[in-house]
Length: 301
Image 1 (spheres, rainbow, N blue to C red):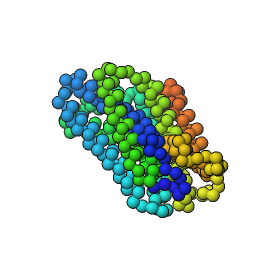
Image 2 (tube, one colour):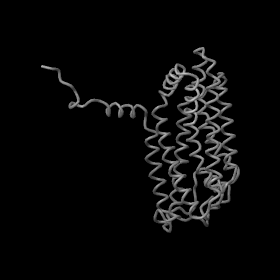
Image 3 (cartoon, rainbow, N blue to C red):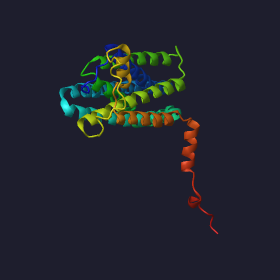
Image 4 (tube, rainbow, N blue to C red):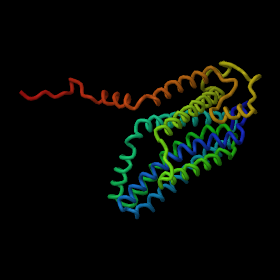
């Protein structure tokens, strides 16, 4: 399903764009699984591994099911209804992905300890709790991936290439996770997640602009005729750069004013929050929780 006059991204662009998402999100998920598996092995709880992998497997199937439902389900409707679904799905995806990216930025330093503590409690409860913990940990990351892929599902008219690219990216991520686990390679995770997080924000900005255009087409947002600029005569959407920009950031040569405003404001605000030093975020959090004089108890006379 596409906006009326948009050109579908090339196969290569669809594969690369969705593949990058697969690698980033897959590696993030792989690290979570690696932490949980290492905790079980080092703690002499190998019997819990089968429940861990069971939860992972079910979560992966769920994620691909969600994506397939979105990807192929939206191709069964057309016209203004299709644009409405595309717009709403895109905006929901942007909100959830933004929250998750910013949360990951703040919680990254404590995520290992939190996961280990959660697994320790799950072991005490039983095998079902281990299964549920791994399912939720992987499912949360996978749900983010499925939502990110909405932008590709809505922009490729039912093509299967984004799903193939996502699968290839996940395979690469699994291979990298295994190599990390056995100590064959090392990755600077701070740099990796900062770079890929910034990339996801740029992708999300494009999805936001796409959603705004879809809702303008339906008539739910104003300004469909107000073009910010139009370089259609000089911009070949079927060229390699045209399809690359369309596939990666949903760029089009004739955006509306509202699309440009949404893209610029979102990118400026979210990227700034994402790139703020962790020390600044911690200091703000400390100030927010520090008791004020009104809350300080005075000693009894």
